[in-house]
Amino acid sequence: MRSDTVKKGPERTPHRALFKAMGYTDNQLKKPLIGIVNSFNEIIPGHIHLQTISRAVKDGVLAGGGTPIEFNVIGVCDGIAMGHRGMSYSLSSREVIADSIECMVMAHGFDALVFIPNCDKIVPGMLMAAARLNLPSIFVSGGPMLSLNDASGRGLDLNSSFEAVGAYKSGKITEKELWEVEENCCPGCGSCSGMFTANSMNCLTEAIGMALPGNGTIPAVYAKRIRLAKAAGEQIVETLEKNVRPLDVLTEKAFMNALAVDMALGCSTNSVLHLMAVAHEAKVKLNLDIINEVSKRTPNLCKLAPAGKHHMQDLYNAGGVYKVMDVLLDAGLINADAMTAMGVTIGEAIKGQTYTITDPTVIRPIDNPYSKTGGIAVLRGNLAPDGAVVKQSAVDPEMLVHKGHARVFDSEEEAIKAIYNKEIKSGDVVVIRYEGPAGGPGMREMLSPTSAIAGMGLDKEVALITDGRFSGATRGASIGHVSPEAAAGGPIAYIKDGDIISINIPENSLNVEISEEEFENRKKTTEIKKKTNLTGYIAKYARLVSSADKGAVIE
Image 1 (spheres, rainbow, N blue to C red):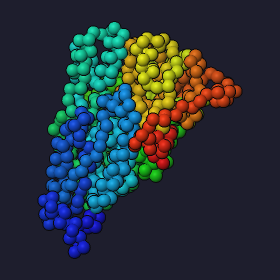
Image 2 (image 1 turned 45 degrees about the vertical axis):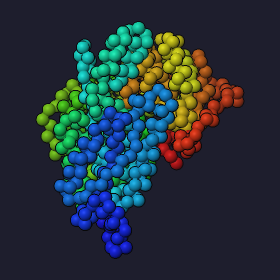
Image 3 (image 1 turned 135 degrees about the vertical axis):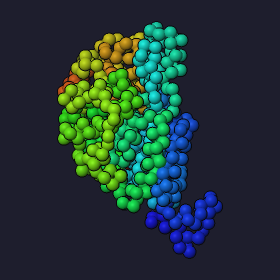
Image 4 (image 1 turned 30 degrees about the horizontal axis):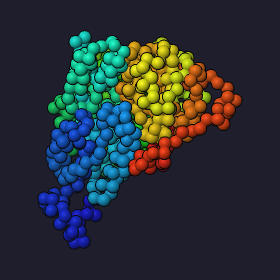
């Protein structure tokens, strides 16, 4: 066993002594040491209950014949970090998570790992670590939050509160109505209840083969989530015995499967960044062109919030991720022979499931999709020569093709102020720049401005373009990840108020209607802005991070 390096032989007497100082017995040290990588903390609703999940995983490991040993990693709540300097630390925390896990695992000789994530950057950070370390691994998330209905029967979620602020600012709702949303939109533990980034990544972890069936959709408060955690604990011992490793699972076929499910579910645009980052660690070629190819051939079968009225509990009741994969498999859109961490193929795992409850209004049949193309589209043009990303499934039909005057802002804060001051008019295209991976730094999420636009009733009339990114809760014609970013001298740095911007999502194009000659003239007279007040980790991150079209990884 790998753990023999810290526990076997007379030379390891000091090491065993340190284990015994913590209460480990000789018998425990004879068994495989299973690292329980837990992201529990008391600042993320999706993580507040992960001690319960961890205990269940440990029970499973013990039942399977291993010795569980837990350690913790950091996590950032995107919602609490939103709209202020803290958001610079969200995406950048992904790299810290991966690096810290590497440190812990390499230092302590674990044989295998169970990862317990739940929210936004924690899931991909752990997947990156799993690929990098290549030890037998399995994932079990904390599960999604439930959604409650308001008085009108509308399902509430975190996005409801952001949009309610815009509605309040525009006089559409009262302060009491705003408070009622605040009281009810997040009723308890779990990852926020729509197909936002956290749930997108937990679903895709299941689809890519690194988690047991149900990982993405079983609600956090259901007892079945506890049973799933126990099963994951037992499974990791079996996975170790079979010597199935992450790089056996994270193959090109597995990433194609994950992308197909991504398109069918209508996942967050952040999933593009994260899948590319995980692929980078797994040494699998993945780029925006491949993502567009998968999107063009994969129909969008689900419209969960923010794109539609359904939430994660509805997807669970309809059969979950594996039911979606079953539909895709029958249509020839899933690679059935891709391996899973369970030691069986994904095709075997899918066909081994029994779907007692199905709902064709939540998971549409392949011949009646919401659209013939997937939930995400990659756009290119003279404004984004290296690509931009939009969640097309959350765009109203009338905004799929749009042309309007640019309203340009050099920060999220400037844009929010203008929106709340009612300076944005119907037909405008809001441009927020210097929010990219290096320029932000950290690609801050623009949920506040997009929600303000939606809350004020302008989401069917106004588009937003940024070199930053969006929350998975964002809806409307919100185009992010514009590459190259402004700080790197990308075309978005040279846009001026009043320029005509042309968006054509069906044709995958994003252009500004100015000549190449005018672009060149502006380059000579426009100063590229650089933030000079950066310190600590975020300063180092800004120096080292790659562009969004490469997954914003540290190179």
